[in-house]
Every structure is written in C-alpha cells, then in structure tokens.
Image 1 (cartoon, rainbow, N blue to C red):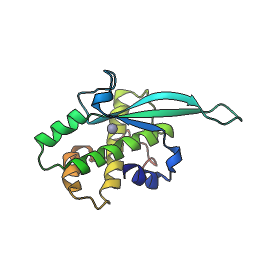
Image 2: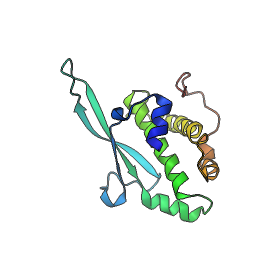
Image 3: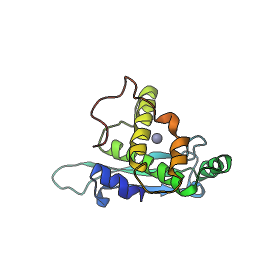
Image 4: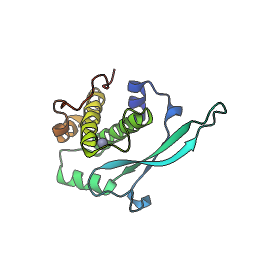
Length: 161
Ligand SMILES: [Zn+2]
C-alpha cells in the first residue's frame, strides 16, 4: 500500500523501485539502529542494463527496526500497528525516491539531514492523511513535532505536486 501511494504521488511505475526490506532477525550490526523506527541503507550500486552508456542503479535496503516499533506501540497504546508501519514505510519510500532522483545526497551535513528529515515527514503527512486508514490521526499526532513550518534551509519547489 505504501509503495502504491508513493508511486502515485511521484508518478513512478513499480519497475522503477529498487529496494528490499529487512527486519531485526535478518539485520547485521550496521543495519540495526536503536533510535529510529526504520532506516534506509544504500545496499548496492549496479550498472544498468543500458548498452548506450553506463548508468548507475542504486539498490536500497529499508531496515524496519521492529523491536523499536513494538516498543513504541507498547509505550503509546493509542497507536495501531498498521497505521504506524504504513506511515514509516511511506516515509522511507519517499527518502528512496528523493535519493534516487538526486533530490537528496547520502553524504549530507547533519543540518541538511535534519532539514531533509522534516521535509520528508511533511511529504509523508500530505500523503497518508488523505488515506482512509483507521488510527492514522493518532500516528500523525505522534509525529506532529516534525510537521512544523519549513526553516530557511528548505529550497523552494521540492515539495510534492
Ligand atoms: Zn526519515
């Protein structure tokens, strides 16, 4: 569902996605992050099959920190598993869309990273708040601190259509 709504928003076809998903039981130490609920890792850089020129194709890995997700659900009983994971997956797919279209660089400064994080949260909100998913209001409330006004670092014209 997350892939479908992000594809619709950014006019992507399903063949353009290059990512895989891991959960805690199959992650190594690098992929396990005690902080966020998920993270995106650049897992491989491949040549495309174009014979005209060498083009790189990046493959991403979404590491769902299921231990952190379950802990959050335990601490915040108003949150539901489905709307929370849907928000997280939409959010991570927006990161991938932005990395793969060079709207954001993996080697960003901490300030740029924070600014990008806020931008991606706002894009996530715009997408998921339109969905008829029970419990999404509580999830949006949980992430509300990320949905504030844009600071001076944000470039114009990078929002969704
Ligand atoms: Zn993020």
